[in-house]
Each structure stands twice: as structure tokens, then as C-alpha cells.
Length: 479
Image (cartoon, rainbow, N blue to C red; front, side, top):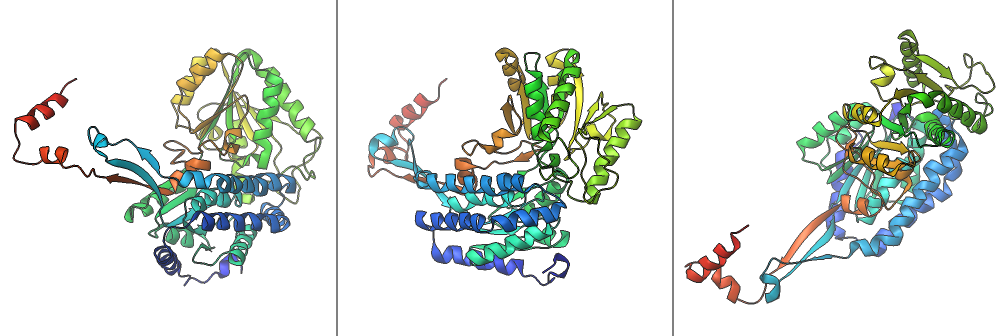
């Protein structure tokens, strides 16, 4: 049903109680149960591929179906298959070394990875399918159940996912609740065993406050202004092509999209020319091009246009990359041509807010330390991108900046590596998932110590304390 007709009596607390009771009733899920859940999730993506692409296109006004197939369907299947392949190894207890001298007397120590229980997943509108199924890979691998609150901004996709999961899972395993901000606020107030939120930093403050009332552990996947630093050794043409590909994918509506680029002062014109050539090569036309995605709605379109108006009024040079010189003032969607903002200043909105659109400010620098200093003066970003062949400069950039993750000589691609953790730091997020790191994130690491059967050491630790005890303890108090 349409989101505005969702019953206000939706019993989310009842669903959570039902899942928690099922978790206790069934006990820790076996590897076979976990694999079965992963297989059912994979099956949904395969069987509903066409409907997913159609729903996303409807929600965005226009969204490239090829891009949706890649970013939301194929990449989600990849995450689920990776978890399926490795979860038996991840589930094995990890042996640890007992403190001396207990290990010599037969004591044992290990860590067991126990499911947390029920994980709440709040997924965003920009990649609504992938950012539901990718965390779900770790949630299922760790043996948990899930409740999902997808975005109200992608209404058709949210309704589709509710129908998909209801077809393949009981509501004791997975439940999807749809609705607007009121439903979202109630969802964040539930006493989950863990909660994953992907979205804006401004909303994360509210999510974290709500979770605090129940001391719910959180994984926050946010965003921020991810910088690009191009060294003088970078191939400007190749770098421009890779940067613009990352910036234009999904019309720049990516939490990891490059948000601004630092270019050596004397190479700005070369980079701009490379960006124009790259866009022209990928998109000879834009307005009616099926490969070029629209901004999701009028509100975000107006927001992005206001950034450009503000930058223009404050003296920036605006370079619209429009290969066919098309007129975008009348169009059925909300497409914006890729646009460069040259010589932006700190007081411009485009340099203060996360852009989340196909706009890229270009900043000039004389020395690498200037770019590093600028990055460090601002919130720690979700991603950072370095281009160049100067190994010493690369290490200087990486060692003197802090970001959630890094891609060298490309943008965004570290998120596609299932064997790397994905997450932010500070204002760009907390916690991480993907692959083994997702399994650990959604597992309770239970420490288990089995005491020695020998009484010799244990007796020495009990009163009455004698001279032998004092010598042993004093022997440990040293540098």
C-alpha cells in the first residue's frame, strides 16, 4: 500500500518481541541455517532483478537500469556470496593464550562469536537495495534476525522490498516496516540488539540519542566531504576520467562520491580539459541518455541548484559539462549536467555541505601540505582519494590524514572490496562492516576461560598469604 496509508498502529515493538522470542527459542543458528538465509536473499535479488530496476527508475524519475543492475543487484549478490563462502571459517572459536602460568597448568582461553539477536537496519534512498542487503550479509552470517526500515523517499523500492522479504522469510526472521519520519523515529527507539543506520550525519544525531535510551550498539554509516588530492605525478587525463566516473555514477548521489578535488595550481586547466573529455566520452548526450541518472526529487534538485547559484554569486567560475549543449530548463526528470566549480571559497554552501550530486569543486594548491592541512581542518571524511605515482607523497598524505577508507589512483572502489572493512570515523560514522568485519560487527565476542584442574597455583593465590606469594607478586612488579 502507499506509504501515506500505512496503519499508524503498526506494531513494531510486537515484531521485535516476536523475533527476540524466536531467537531464544531456536538457539544459536547453525551454519546451515545461516547459509539458507543467505541463499534465500540471493534468490530474491535474482528473481526480482527486473522489478528492482523498474522500481528504482520510478523512484528516481530516471535511473540507469544498467547502473542499478551493477550497484544494487550484482554488488549485493557479491556480498551475500562472500559471506556464504566464508562464514563457516568465521564461526570457528578463536583460541587465545591464557595468562602465565595458568596455561602451563592446563587452562584454556578462547573467543566464541555469538549472534547478538535482532539487528535493526535503516537503509537510505540513494542505493536502497544494496544498503539493505549488504549489511544483511553480515547480519545473516553472524546468525541474527533483522528488522528493516527502508527510506520513504524511494517509495516504490521500499514497497517492493517489503513484498520480496515477505515472500521468502517469515516475520520471525526478517520484517520490513515502511513509513515516513514518524515510523522511522519509532523504529530507532526500539530495543534492538544492534542497529545499523546509513544516512545523513544530521539524522545520525537523532538516531544515536534514541539508541542511547536502550543502550543499543550502533553502526553508523554516514558521509561527509570526501576529498581528492591529485599529486603532480598523477596522469591528469586518466585521473579525471576515473574521478568523473565516480562523481557521475548515480548522479553523484553516493556517500563516498568525491566531494572536492585538490589540483596542483599549474595543472588546473589540464584537469578541467580531462574532465570535459571524460564526460563527453561517457555521455555524448545527457538529457535523454538512459545511462545518465536523475537527481532523486525536486527538493534535492533545488538544493543543488542553490549551491551553484550561491557559488556563482560569490565569484566562482562554473563549468557546466554539457557535450551536446542541451537545454535542461524543460525536462521530465531532475537531471543536472556534471558541473565543475573552480576557485570556490570557504563561505560557499558547496564547500560547507555534503554535495550529494554531480557537482565537483576544484581547489588549487602549491604544496601538498596545503591540501593535507585543509583536510585536517575539517571533519574526518568517509573516503579519501590520492592520485599519483610518488610513493613518498602518497605515504605523506595517507599518514597525515584520517578518513574512513582510502582508494589510491581511483575513487569509491575500496567499498567494493568485500575483504576490506567499510566504515567511517567520527562525523563520517562509527563501526564497520563487509566481509569478516561485518561478521564481527554483528557478533558478540564472548570470552571464555576454562580454569586449570590443578590446585597448586590457585592455592597460592588464596589467603593466608605467605612469603612465597609475596615473592611471586613482587617479581611481577618491574619495568
